[in-house]
Length: 300
Image (tube, rainbow, N blue to C red; front, side):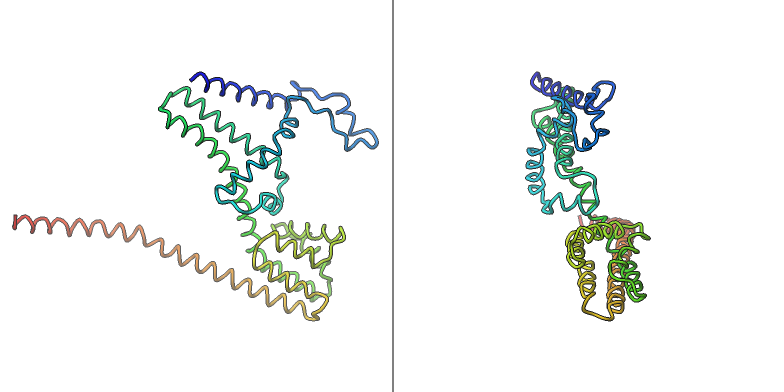
């Protein structure tokens, strides 16, 4: 168990070093790093990165963590790009930061498994299961967290879409331009689509055309109803009755949502009968088995 103890000690030492390097009383920033943001033209200056700090660790292991995380994700069946999922949910993390955090938690799980192995001293198979099971559990937990957030965001967009489409249609019918209608809905809303529309408007201000910005949104959200609505909005310069077309599309989306809700209610209604069936079947089987064995004993 000596190699395990050494490995656990190294992991613990590295973790404590990275943790203490973030504490101000333990690792004080240099004067140049503290004054740099207040010097004209110094907003982009960065202080000297320490040899043992979170920044140096991120710069050293970032590319490796990104490559390993991508390979492991594909190995476990996650095909969608991480950058796409993080952008969809408006996360503050980029791919490198998330992968470094994911690898860090995985190493922490490996260290905890090594400590448990050193303390309990189980058989070799159980020891390997504890060590590598903790590593995989930490990795997959963070991966599932991002995937779950992405799915919840897509679901929120799908449920908000009928109301937002109706609002855009009414504003267009009232004389608003397409950009004006999207801007008003984004400012007055507070849901998932409102945040997505802020990004669309930012892209339009950067010089991207309205149709292209909306296409980017539809591609990023990966919701079929959004794709259909964007196809209707793309007719802004061609159709004169765009408000009516949007209203019809909103009604179609609402019917799809209602149909899905009815299907879910029917499935849950069927699931209610499963415990009832089991509860009535078991006593019936008992009452049938007892007379059967009683009658069978007369022939033996």
